[in-house]
Length: 198
Ligand SMILES: [Zn+2]
Ligand SMILES: [Zn+2]
Image (cartoon, rainbow, N blue to C red):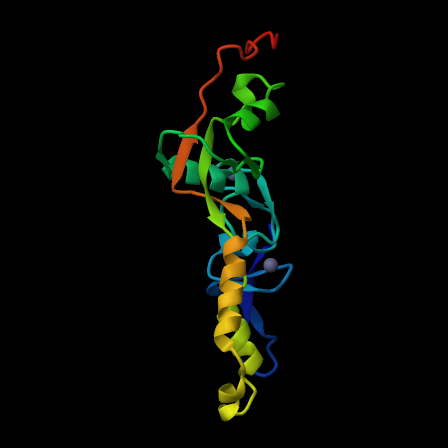
């Protein structure tokens, strides 16, 4: 409990009377960092441990969020629209891991009882790397030059054409989880039994 009332000094009746102190109305402060607060509860919590609103897990003293990461992930999953899984990469927010497909996901969890396997996952989109942004690079390279300089550059079109072709050859894709959607993975028939693990 770090919260304190703040006191205002009230002068005595005559210069010889000692001053008295009375607490400010509706004003408290944190005994650790001195920050002002409009309620004792807020002052108490200021430099105290924060807890997740839902699961009550400790969030740390400096936390400004009201939910822990797991509860944020779960809230997002709860809100997401359930769609049919049609193959492709998937994302598990709990472990922050990507899987190429259902098979890799199941392989990774094959030693766990089904109850411990994440049941809700986000599907992913494959985003192709677009390559070099030649327009920005070009503007960057010419921005400090004199205005008439551009007229003297040889074969600007060739530069753009080359980079566009080169960008087109790139095959790199990155995975972007679709947080608005979720999928579930069906339990395979031969999955180890829950109780015995056998
Ligand atoms: Zn404080
Ligand atoms: Zn939580």
